[in-house]
Amino acid sequence: MPENRPQTPLATKLGFGLWVISLVWWFAYYAQYGGAFGLMDLKLACISWPTKECYFFQQQIRGPVPRYVPAFWYAGMLAFAVGLYQTWQQRRK
Image 1 (spheres, rainbow, N blue to C red):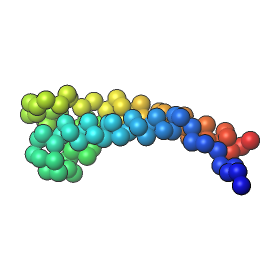
Image 2: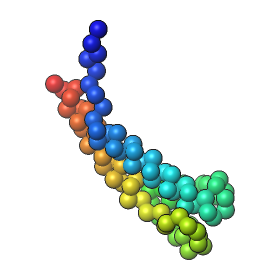
Image 3: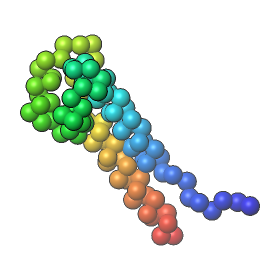
Image 4: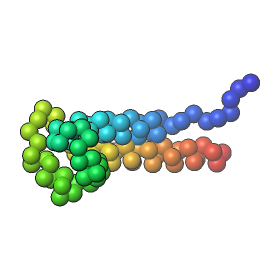
């Protein structure tokens, strides 16, 4: 019995992959200040947008992990949006 379900577009997979890279980078970078889960409520906003607290943390962190920039986060959002559009187009056929 063949499956009629359309395949997941590459853009969707790429979007998820970029989000995972971004989350790992964000976690590794901000874990250098206050521990891995310390001040998580303040650090969480730094995933997508730099707040005053994010700037403060960045000024204090002197570690081996490069400064986190949400470029992969936004690239993942864009790729995921393209993938959703492609899925929508496949289902319209």
